Length: 443
Ligand SMILES: Cc1ncc(COP(=O)(O)O)c(C=O)c1O
Image 1: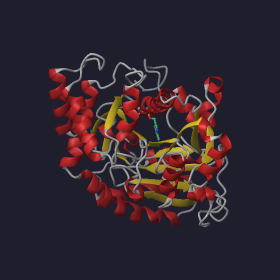
Image 2: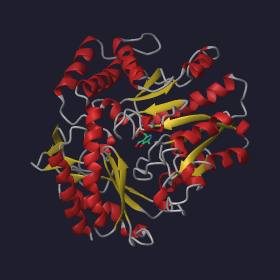
Image 3: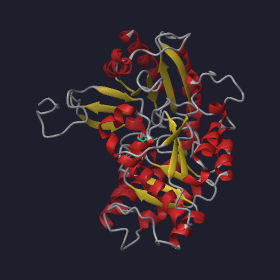
Image 4: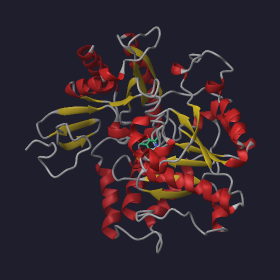
């Protein structure tokens, strides 16, 4: 039976395509029921960082679930959540030492924003309610998270239900008018945040949220070395909480546990997801310091964001098993070492037609497509370049992650690569070869 709507009972993500049925995964490879294999170049949605089919992780999860699979976080704590919080506290920088676990990145983004808002209300600063975010940006699909995003095509149907969010341009040098070349460019250096805060009145702003390294919205754009230090200073100066969204770029993806690590600064709140469980179960987390959490403890006595699966043993067991596996097999160091090779080999793609820029850090890369390399003019949306490339790559047995609209909100095509940390040099070469073949096919 073909796996397409309405021939089965699944309400598929795309109701007009036929899906291959995946029956097995191993390392960087996926296998479908027709005997086809796929090189998982993007870990699904940037999730499968340990690789597929790791029995050590499955056994550790099974061991917890056999003892107890679920208890409510209202009534009990459990061994998995305690041990997972300890592991994360050891890995996470600065004073981010307390963790709230949820089952999706969107939930965790909402919880982080509520934490920020609740903190200001408890402190008697209720006027602090505005949020500042980047454009382009993506932070999830529940309504508050969707409000933070700057993808109009995701928002248009739901506009009446969304919040107004103030914005600064993301540090995205390839698309900046200065092309990343002006030392004092307000967008590339981060000084633009202070201009906006002064305009809004800092007494009205609760939080600023951004991805430390660009995820799918800016295709792995890496901000300048002093960008986040400046943001830290501005947020401190104006008493605005800085929330780092590490859902996509954290957990070792860019070669360090946190993508902010090379910048040497710590946010007020950090959000994690995707890779922290390697995809073995849904899991996300909000990390916060005592200086914020104590205020909640002295006020409403807890974070006002209850959900059924907060701290649930089965979910936390997956994260615990994944993080212990990551540490035992030194996979972050491996992501850094293989990341250097990965970025070098991918540079060969820059010479191909329609490739505007290849960029990234560690095992996260973005390849931006353009109609004209010199002017950086994007393809018009009608051409559906990213979608056609992605379909062509899938035919070539390579899974990539497409994104559109980043050049001007409508036009712009890029694809992302984010392979599992266990990738080998030979598999990196295979990604490059299949990418090349897929592009030749489309061009
Ligand atoms: C940067 C970022 N934040 C938040 C989210 C939302 O995570 P989830 O899809 O698990 O809800 C995503 C998802 O892609 C993301 O890329």
